Image 1 (cartoon, one colour):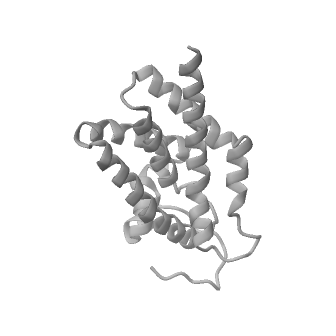
Image 2 (tube, rainbow, N blue to C red):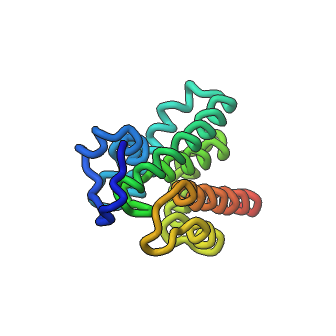
Length: 179
């Protein structure tokens, strides 16, 4: 993937772009991030569905490996996709939601559909509204206007969603403690 740094106008995320760029295939959540409305929510729904399909086959150690390797590969993919789109944190990049919600569902352990639905709602609230620590995490790796998009910004795409996952898990733990 070559990135033309002389042209700084943003590019649109498309199926054609995703099919040409392996990093975009991953970063766009295998197409879920190309939703014209609420791509982060669609990416999180894709994460929920794929988790449900994979969970019977993966042990805790396998989930840990999937999330760790997915984070390393995702760091590369999110960085390259942001560079390709020329946007520091593109809406079509939803791999961050996928990994973070997989982490939530995995650490919740076996849980009811209602508990998973509550987790979904809380995660989307924390990710979209970015209250407190999530807003802080979102600002940690922002590039200055016009600055090149680098590895720090790619990590930042993932970072705020992992913090949102932590806030979701903390809220669920409090809910369970007082229920």
